Length: 259
Image (cartoon, rainbow, N blue to C red):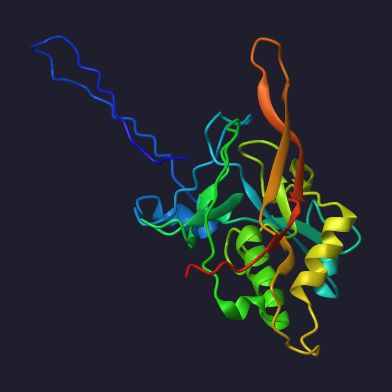
């Protein structure tokens, strides 16, 4: 809630001492009881959502990671609402949209990959691309495996806040991190999951021979979001009802001499 204040004054006819009464209301941002004493603190982070409750077209799609805590001892005995069988679940999500659902981006002023990731906005179909510089070393056995891993790491955003691995997508524009049922997993097919695992956990023990082609490189990923309008006919709300991540077709890359 955005904090603000206002006042009203009531005055009687002239010649009679005025009687006034001042009213003020303050709305503040807080996440715990300690914040009640700091409603005028201008430094606290404002978390701008993407709708209320339905998504607004053009706003970033919210995403986070599911976390599970198993409680025991006194924690279990003192469990609160929403905790069943000693297990507490929630969604870890940053207030920064750059850490929500994103895709690979290029460096500023260059087509090369490695720049800030691009936010996926609700209701917008988009296509982004960037390039990876290659060298002769990329066409050895180990070099090709490293190139596959580098490409996949960039596409999935591994090691960044935009990591697409094991993500959960907010069904509504203001889904609560404490309510797991308001989030849905970003699905990946079993075959794509195996490919990702094989590429990221490759074996470097093989002989490092020079090759004239690097085969089976994944150069693209595809994100598909299924949406629906729910609620009142007179005021329908946009909701995400499904999310799928899939790898693009494998490509073979060959070196080219420029002389």
